[in-house]
Length: 241
View 1 (cartoon, rainbow, N blue to C red):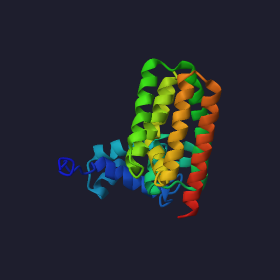
View 2 (view 1 turned 135 degrees about the horizontal axis):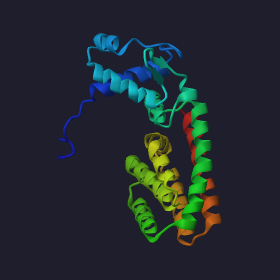
View 3 (view 1 turned 90 degrees about the vertical axis):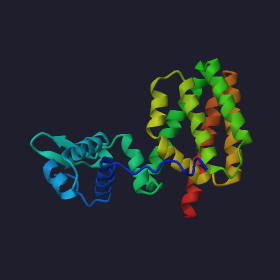
């Protein structure tokens, strides 16, 4: 009951501003190279304060959607060329959790390079605290109901993030966190199948054993197999829509 009565949180005006302009840019209603009205005009037309507009534009610039130039204003970018990792969450939200095929393929290819290397380094550099945390996640996975898609997806993310921490590379955990929502949306699509859940959990247990034993080769090969399996499942989900 306490969870049901949690405080209702309305989005801030800045968040509404950002969401609206993300949609306008990603849909093509605002064209590449188009200059937006001044902050003053935007504030008047939208009925918000200039600080709201300014902070929203700064956020859009950080994502690579616009470029802010003094005495010129905000100019719409080609997000495919200028977009940052921060834009991935916006792309997923705009697509309602679905990525366009080319973007999804690109993301999966990046995971092959990045997470295979993460598994290799984790097997080499893991410490006892990392190992204990991974063991706890795997044990919790074994106890989780197969139909608890949200819980299973969250545990899956924790497992991969712990591997990144165990790698000893300071950037890898931040990189995984930077596209957490994208990751969760993709994983949730195929964890609705209990058979897939069982297969992925078996991969996790095998990777854990490899990390425990400092078995670099097995960690690499198993991670690669798991990522290929995940990509195949996403393709099946896409075909069945």
